[in-house]
Amino acid sequence: MVQHLQSHLQDIIDKQQLYAVFQPVINVINCTIVGYEALIRGPSGSGLERPDQLFAAAAGAGQLARLEYACREAACLSFMAQQLPGKLFLNMTPLSFTDSQYRDGVTMAILRRLKLDPERVVFELTEKQPMEEYELLSSACEHFQRQGFAVAIDDLGAGYAGLRIWSELNPDYVKIDRHFVSGIERSAVKREFVRFMMDIAHRIGNKVIAEGIETADEFKTLVSMGIEYMQGYYIARPSREPTLQMPEHVNEARATAMPLSRDTFHHTLREVTVTERGITPEISAGEVVKMFRSDVRLTCLPVVTEDQKPLGMISRSELLNTFSWRYSYELHANKPISGFISARTLMMDINSDLNSAGRLVTEDPAQNLSVDIIVCERDRYVGVAKVRNILRSIADEKLRAARHSNPLTALPGNVPLYEWIDRLLCQRADFIVAYCDINHFKPFNDAFGYSCGDDVIILLGQLLRQVVDPELDFIGHVGGDDFVVVFKSRDWQARCEQLLERFSQSVETQMPPEQLDYWIEDRHGQRRRFGPLTIAIGCVHPDPEQCFTHHQVAMLLADAKHRAKALGGQQLFVSRRRSPETA
View (spheres, rainbow, N blue to C red):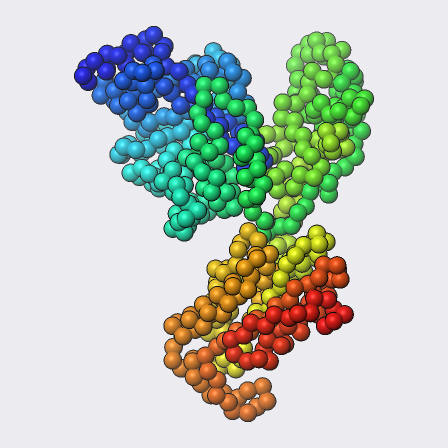
């Protein structure tokens, strides 16, 4: 039986009976398809139709490398025949590197014949068998990357030595195994593992792809966690003729699951767009060369039709490089400039956020950072956004967010909180603001020192993070032991009561007995006995028709806080006053 399958395999390869199906890989942030993973199939109905059957037979016959070459050729042929956009993800087993038939240069020869740029190819290393040839694997991957290919680790977390291979290869992409995706909306443990892998990947500059997404709940959970790249049956099933557009159901689910940014507010391209008169597509290339040579400040020029439809960007460096060759001026000077539009042209709507623009220009290593973005409004040209201005604005916003964060808890401080409230008021949104304050914190601090006091503040910050909905609510640390939460969660009251209960339990179980019952002078110099720490929460429900700034909300909140503390002990006070006039 085994001999028959191996003989059948030889026949399939020789007669080129392999075919590829493609599954899209999407970028959720930009709402685009960034590439396709090629999955190989054998003849339908045969014992070697599935890829696991094919590769098992190849491993037994010592034909892994030969099968992989045939798979790559079939995938590349179909990819180019359909003119699929983006990158082509090709699977490769590390064991094929040790195959006696492995030959360098075969893949590059296939790509040259099909005119497929190596920068568009990503090799996925599947690692489901023990692999000890780390030096061979590392040198082979380094060789691929030098040639312009990207490398991805497939099924991260499912293999025998995933973390070691990850650390030694430093791939361009890591694909989180289906195990961690399945039911992630129901598993806090899986969410923590995924966050751990995301954190490592982002720190070392790798892109993370979550694969095997099969349900809307899995998709929405991953979106809310900040995963940018995804693939799976929920998005689209593998197909010989895959979709070229983002599926509508994915767009709808994405819109309801997009996380609110916690390190920046909504800044758009409108803030960095400058008006720049475009050139017509009919103008000669020679005239544009003269423009560039007469003004060293010009880095690029937009090509725009008379009815203000943008066609693309002319790059100074690309055009002058073309005209630097011998006889190039005679050959190209009289041609229309529309034939020299940069392949790296990016067009975005004026209301696109700056972070999306920043990702577009930085995630592609081949992107020319000197080519500015063409900015449109309702598909009509309005100006250009300089890449350097976009990146500078993003960096400035990151620094501003860090500057206004509390160093003890790393939570946003007063300025981001006020901006958040003002933004909700402008939107006429319905929200609740809660002021959380630790009762008798100063006597506790005086009795046990700042270190113990800081521990309590950190504890309260951690508990707040646990009880709020990170997709709806905002936590601000406004100084000392004072925290403010802006709730959009409908069950805000239950969350506040949960906070009171968790704080009380934590104090009783985590603090030593001497901190639960002690004597010290109070604010008036009188020696007093104090018990376990408690918190008071004062809540207000601002009327967006009568409150217009955070100052007015602060007036309501100060009164609610005062009343909550006056009640003494663990208290939740909900004010019925909704406007400053009645406060």
